[in-house]
Length: 426
Length: 166
Image 1: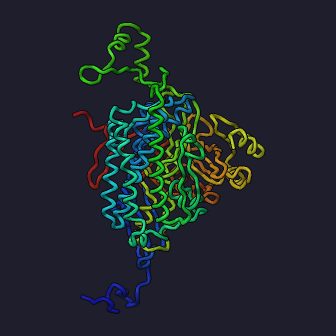
Image 2: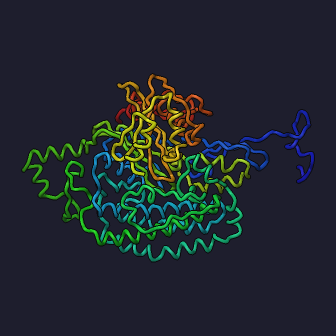
Image 3: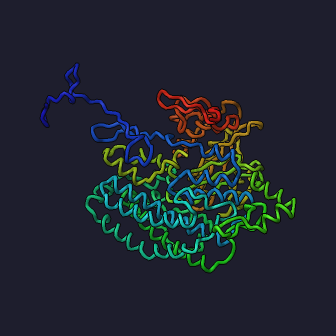
């Protein structure tokens, strides 16, 4: 056994020549590593503890979502895209549906647009909470992990009440949303609005001036505004580098221009600034949720467009078992009108027909610009759906953030990017 | 700037330009791609200095077969422009734009992986999503969905449609 500081430790000297070894070491971090947020593999070249180069290798979670959409109807596309970035499913659904709606030249009714804003902003909070929980855990803040996941659970309960599912909701549909808020929905959201600000204060008390948190985050993963822009970085990471770019303000959709909210910006461009930006964003999102809930109360109407060429043909009504097909509608299509039956059959099997053309629709997801480049050749299926996922593009900036830094900072820098591999690999 | 105004300003330099569904779309030849992108990026009245997205579509029956789409965004002026380039052949080539937009690096690797379009001058044009030894380019319209056996160490499970009903 060799003691610490022993000049003759075998590791330091080449066995053959006896000279002190100078070469760098190449190690794999991931794909199965707790801090890689899924299955990300980082090929690191190290000189001692200093990172000489970092090469992210991705594709381990590639599921062919874009290809799959080409083999399904337009409406079924929602169930595929929602699974891309699985921590922000509503944003995927909204981006895709807005793109298809623009191709169709239609708009969802006001009440549906309000509900979309409502679920998106709740989703932004739940997504940021996962970032806070996992990022905190990776830097040793275990209590923050527990609190973050605890509050996320409350939001997932709300999602479950609204959509029936905790994730991958397929709630946003072309022409509107699947259904209105349940009776219990407003109460659950109001409850959250009441409790959550205090919880954010709690996280900040734990972290803001925590010496370990600051030591691990301040000055780590630096990215200048110029570098961020040239690498295509968007979202909280870009805003933490001093660029106030937010698509909700710059290219408003869903009526975001009518909501009152601020875009938090920091100039330091480090992991701590990103932490601060996301904390502020959670407060702003909560603000928007409150406004949306109030508007929802003031805006009556349907949550799906009243266009038989777009909406799902079936009609539901509450039967003795709680839910079921509307008997009058069944009688109409089965006994009354052959045309109605044909229409019903065509809408269920083929779905909506979208005129030929292409659009690029971008929405501000919790991670930045989520773009949908949707091409139609005029049929009942998408010709091409390209998802410009912010995680994919932001991850490209990781080498620029960690090269020349310590290997321990790779963990903090990667956590501050908040990549979701489902979105990166699609 | 609204789309019509962007089309007007960019139209001074680009012959083939139109506004559709509120989006400005311009088409150029592959050999004019780099100059056009550089101009759009540096023109002070447009400031389209942010490359949002880069992708391709495949039209096997048409000539050119592939269309590359470069979605440019102005962070300062809040407008967009899409530049499209057609490339043809079974192994099409296009110049890399990584020199103008470093973010294009991964986008071009992805397009190479999925469509088999070779970006000349790219610093590291290797597969991105598919395994390194993958045969073909899955997002081409000539490639079917599925039909690939699942590999796990020594075991090989046939694709779903070839397993037969139990």
